[in-house]
Length: 90
Image (tube, rainbow, N blue to C red):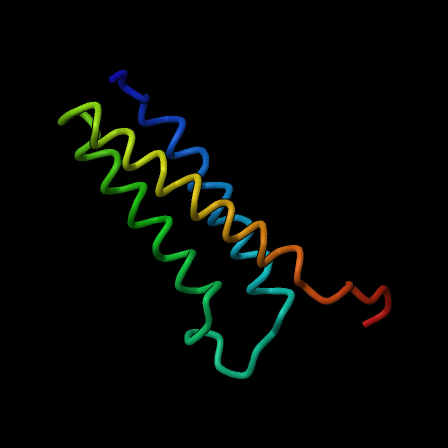
């Protein structure tokens, strides 16, 4: 097993947070806190903190963190593709 550096997972989670924030702004739902985009923003920021603190424990833990980061990015990209088209004059 090989060790995956923390910066790779953190970059994936930062991209996840950015895309979730963009979706959150574009959708403009009536209750902005109870949607999946807000949850993914909080989850990605919390995971960045956890990865920074606990990534040096074992290679298996670094692999699990990387898989969580890649899975959450894949989920957010899937959600991003389902956004309605942007209107030019709104």
